Length: 535
Image 1: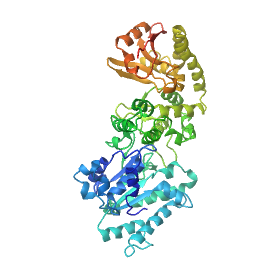
Image 2: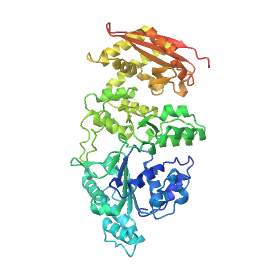
Image 3: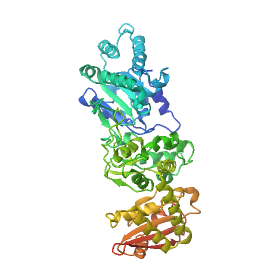
Image 4: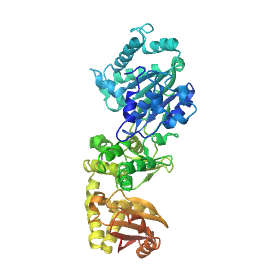
């Protein structure tokens, strides 16, 4: 199970009903790292982003305990010059930390000893005349390298669950676990024995006494992927091919599950896409339903200045620029949260928020995660949200049911006064935030709002597309914002540049909404016009 495993687990992935989405190209990159200073790699990603499947693939490729040529011969890695050179040429130790904790009768207590004993038992079984049961793990590795002339590749999946899922009452067990990892991966002895060290987790490498416990590892995180973006998560092209294969609406899948952007690559959560395809197009909150709202409630309610306001902005569809993603240190002693930015960065690592590595913008990635965040807010002590929701329902009704331009304008004016300070009142971005907040109740009936939706003749400022079940009762909303002009000119721009063309495929009825703010008078105006869709 731990020492030189076979390729059965990867074979099961290859033969799955959905099929294997080929990410084997990453092996060529790791082959370049073998036996170099770059040999220690830590990849952190949110839950269900393909980390475990990757470990199964690496085990099948590197382990000398199997012959995997037939499994890989038609995959991307087979095109690489290094393919045959390293295929099944290494002693491999594979550790699934979460699984070991569940097997240990003491749980996390004395986990380090349990891990060593479990692996040493297999060393003795496979190399009875080489390794003694009294050996330490490092001693056993030394003897096997001498005997086989093969270095080790060590793979640790979910290495950080020890720190994420267990409280401070088990501090000594955590310290022992860290000491074991250090003994395996750090020092000259390790460099002589290990060709590649690969660990995965959700959070960045834990800090101890202000230093990384494994500071010889290069970290590839969701905020700093360093070229590995496309290998964790499904790309848009991969999802489109899968949707075509299973006859699922790709455009709807994009609205519901798209949103993570790393190094310019659009990424989808593989777990949600797999469940969507298996259900033959039943759009639900698959990924978010695997965790409780209690997971984020304590953090979004922390008493840091501006945190609740930013969480509400994000939930309403706004983006935030300027978050310091280095502020979350994943401190061993539990001092990771010392600012608003640290909390938001933590939520990015968990996957409930997204971070565009090119534009440095933070946002809610998709409809699935937005609904989770809104539900978490509604169950928390967010009095501001309860008020905003009732207020927004009135605004939405005034737009859709009454088309009462004056009522909408006055409501937005009231919201503008309430939400923006004097210093920010006359900034153009404050108007967009106010409109997002005023339409927050739309989350029940509409997908996540699309800002600056590209069209054939420009960018529509704000578009709300109704969810499938509400298409017959709610129109699409195409909103154009103006500054020191007129609401009528906003409507004219929507028509002139045909912003509505982009949404015609999604819905029958469309409302065009123009909103203007006059900087001198501090007055708002609104125009609402129905657009007849002949399709």
